[in-house]
Amino acid sequence: MNLLSVLAAIAAGAALSIQVGVNNSLRSIIGSPILAAFVSFSVGSLCLLAYALLTRAPWPSLQTVSKVPVWAWLGGALGAYYIATSIFVAPKLGAASLISILVTAQLCTSLILDHFGAVGFAQHSINAWRIFGALLLVGGVVLIVRN
Image (cartoon, rainbow, N blue to C red):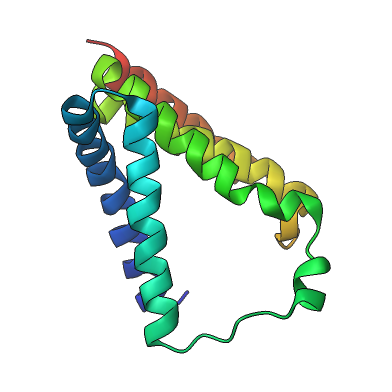
């Protein structure tokens, strides 16, 4: 496992937790969770465009774009759902409960995606250790959510 990749993943995980609070603050000021999500996506899109222009990332041809499977276009919609939902429920659940539920749901879904090699992932079978790890996370959620 590449240490730099692990560190980048840790930073991204920390950023997601911070993002929930930042977006919730934005919602409080703007007054609308959907508009706050829109602003968040707009700022993110501008950052990605700036990065693509600065690094001179090559743009795909229309022929290449036409070969993208229909399901691959859903990433933005899934991201919008994630952001909007986290903005809606963060004030009700709190950061720790929300993030623990999100991470556990991500892991359980990832086990299924890996097992079947779905949506572009390499196939990695579910085994007892993976199930045990997921159950530990579920137990962690129960402990964190209990007040």
